[in-house]
Image (cartoon, rainbow, N blue to C red):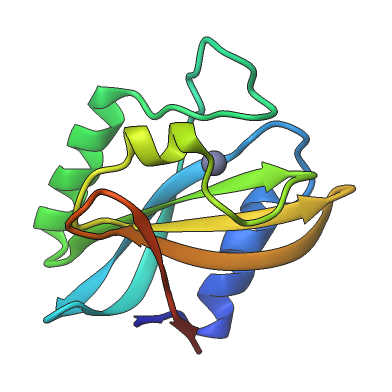
Length: 136
Ligand SMILES: [Zn+2]
């Protein structure tokens, strides 16, 4: 389960809502045996060389910065969020191939620049995505 308070939820939505390109960022918080609480998000730049409206990539240096930020603030890097403009909040095959075990992947569906849906996904032992319940 992934706990997000409404202020953080609104922050994530505000970071992605009015963009026709995929937006992305880091999710920090605490993990208690797989039960996660988010406390902070951080915007990351989408550096994909592909089509920005349907894929995203975060630079390796940004991952390092996020890891360091987590360490310095006594947090864990527990996930990544990204948006799906005009697509449902379901991971693409590319999302699955690029995903890392352990991390939670929040996908925000944005339809016509308006928030539509938010879901979270995590890889299982067979490297398939399973939905993770989001709670306030
Ligand atoms: Zn995606």
